[in-house]
Image (spheres, rainbow, N blue to C red):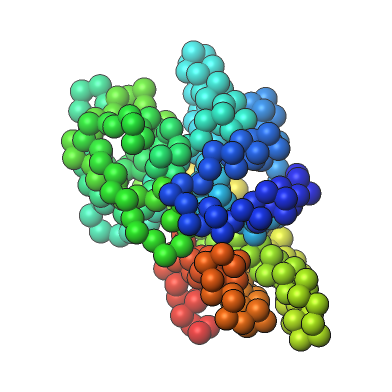
Length: 374
């Protein structure tokens, strides 16, 4: 699957990345190709048409796609969190009809026949809920503002995270898009300097009603935030994919300075991947232990010191990956000179994409680590 992702990035995504960067939306043909290659199912289970890739393998495949086309990657990567959420819901569902329905949805998602998006980063903020979920007869009412949601105009379904006054995170699956508006839900397009073709919007909710059948899960908010802090601390593998693309392009230039820079950066990239695998294993163990601790029949959980050590190590690695991506993009831009600032040249796009991941899925831990190392 890594080789498939790399080949698709080299043959389709990278050659068209500048065109996509300037488009209104990522073309559907890119997603068709990802679906045909089986890459929409990397988080899905085999019984639903997925491949359930181990996390280290999935991260390498993700990095390859990100190194090909950032906009395509960013839409595609959102999709996998919905697959994981619905799979968890299926595991907790006793109703056979509901299980069959979820299985069909997951099969469509794994094949890429349908694309899903999500909006939940606002749940990481402290204070009053950004989106409030209020229980009403037969469902929930959503009110509030979600400042970031990707894939509007591309995805057909969105999972929205909202918080109740009782301290629950309520996950609602809403079928919506520009041609299928939902009452009480409005999308406000965002003007971005990078990844503008991803259909990224802010959502406004004003009395948006979702029925009980649209609720895929409810979680204790404090527990969810604790586990999410661990999961989010490592950041995306995309910066390493950007670094790899820049290293390859530097090497192709052929002159001694560029080739020398590519070799030094390649050594750093190899070390970063070794660390990524190690961090991934540590975070998987932490997450499993935390999930076990939330199970009434589970174990004793973890100490706060163990959690802090894992989060700190992951945040440091995230910062290292960001710095490597930005260094590699800067080296490539330096090597190609002024022509690299043309919108049709990959150097300026890769530099902008490297900068984007400084703020993508940024947590307090990641921000603290980044600022401490500047």
